[in-house]
Length: 300
Image (cartoon, rainbow, N blue to C red; front, side, top):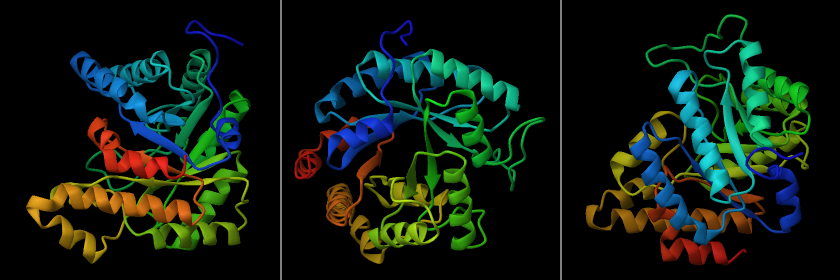
């Protein structure tokens, strides 16, 4: 079935299975104003040369933030990227409004949704669902699948546990619930020690999450101690001493950060990871770095 922008999007799982190799995916966020869209469009155009196997873009709940999210997803579609993964959260919306949003995403031709509970509002310690809203990501997965069964659904995984989880076992139990609700694939929160990822995958499989559900490792490049501090502030990601020490050498920090990222990518692919997902923060410089492009070429 088509839509006003042309043919419908590909499903991530169909595209990934057809590759026969690890995938490369990039994650963007929607700009806050029209000027930002011009800048983002230019960055995306430059990033076409790395030919990501799929792309995703985060979601702003409510009002103009939601409209900017739709505009960013449509921009990625217009620029020829397939599949496009639209993030969706439970924040500030009733179940009825969420169904309307899923309908709108489907009508736009997008066939992939990253289903997330969402973070508590700034200044609040815990998440509270909206009136008649959803409290858990598993509920959102179920809603998406009930509304449009043909949508491929991704969910988040936390190699070093969600900040609100009491234990790794509890965290993986919640992930299994999301898979049982219909999730097709998992993308992890950032981490800087590959051991955390491989241990997480092993624990997931032992807990009954089937190998048919790929767990894509999510990596965030860092080029300075300040950037590293920001990246771990919203997660429980541990910082290897060697990474902190290398980034402290100001004149070499950016080069060291890129070397660390490439070493992570190489180790993950060698270890059997199904692909690499990069949280690139809309910055073309990461994927345009010749060293990263050479690293990607080793498995593609």
